[in-house]
Length: 128
Image (tube, rainbow, N blue to C red; front, side, top):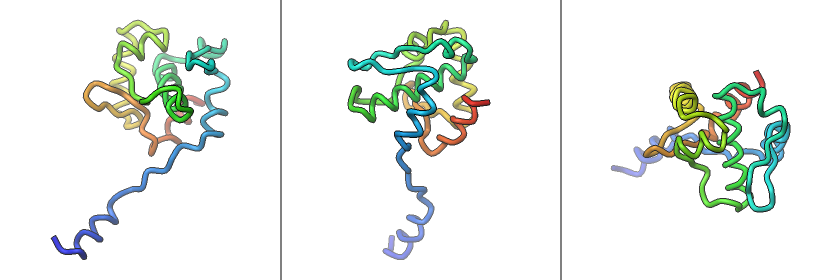
């Protein structure tokens, strides 16, 4: 490939913007806090969320932990998501499939994470 065609292909790449930590904190704070050892401490309003919203809050919590250096990865498997979201697997799986089909969650070899490029859509899903 020539340099010129590579430059043209580079124009197709959407740069991944980091999630604003302050905004992430504002979105999560009504629903969860993180202990110093990285454990989730749910606020009472977490119980009012739908299963897909709980999944999104958990995955955003993982993103926050990763950003703070409290974990090495922001991806979780369905069993971990169900446990952390306090959901039965029967509620977690359909939620994950729906969120993945919506494009707000990505699945990489059975490990799920919030797609940072879809952060605004994730926020709207939680705040709807």
